[in-house]
Length: 119
Length: 106
Image 1 (cartoon, rainbow over the protein chains, first blue to last red):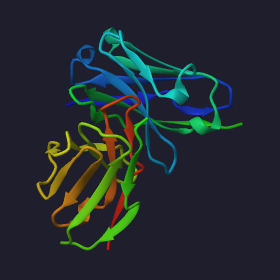
Image 2 (cartoon, chains in turn green, yellow):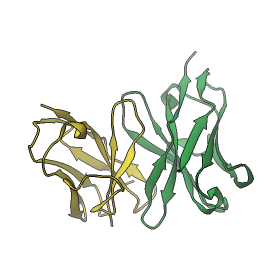
Image 3 (cartoon, chains in turn orange, brown):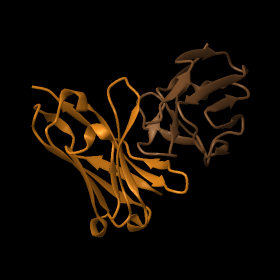
Image 4 (cartoon, each protein chain N blue to C red):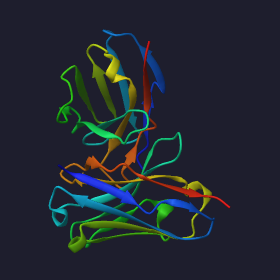
């Protein structure tokens, strides 16, 4: 069974940094492209970042470019999102998701980890 | 960026009623994907590549469309179908989602 378990969320002050993790199991992590997607409280879904299976290709949503860094450790079956210069508008539930890149749909989602940016 | 506009934003349907949700793209896309999100849970893949049902999705659901206009149809509304449905395009970066349609039980 595919499982994605996010962690690392919490309350952080504006301007500070936070690193999220997503541990994968039930599939060969190193074979799959991964993403972060977020959802602000009561709002819709927003794609954040993509990383290829071997980390050769990385893409970000424009508003996250330069502040967020996606990475992965295939030996640890873990996906990361390093977030810096956090703003109140980054407050959201952050999901990791496995993407199927034939036509780019998100096959599996984690349960999410909540990031709250507030002073 | 391709903007996806879903309509209606909210709707209510009675059990047995036929329901159609629409998703319009600001530019042509090759496929549309749909997700169901029940309250307090993660989104689930529901329909991929416009018309293919994800594993476990009842066959009262169907998807159709092309170019800039896509739809998700429920042939006969059931209680368990009450949820928010999001469309998503993967044709070009940034991948984008629609704002969602909240479907309630009447």
